[in-house]
Length: 118
Image (cartoon, rainbow, N blue to C red; front, side, top):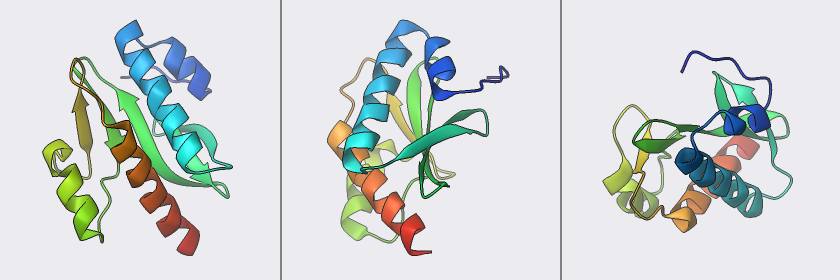
């Protein structure tokens, strides 16, 4: 994606409807899981922030949506995300398959806690 967006709203509005609906649900999931989450565009994709620091990114692609980075340091969470781990810190969730929003919430909480502690 080479287009530049000035807001998460603009990014979502530019997505095809299938991706937009899933990305909006991911956005809502992150905000529910991590209260007082901020957001911005970083690296040309939506990013959620805690105290101004990015803790998670999400993006839409032709056949999937992705969440970045894949968390580490929690064995149970690593096992749970394994089916979606595509390497290089990327979690891929194929469109047309059920999206594990509860798992994404767990990832968001884990990453937000790590950012808050550093």
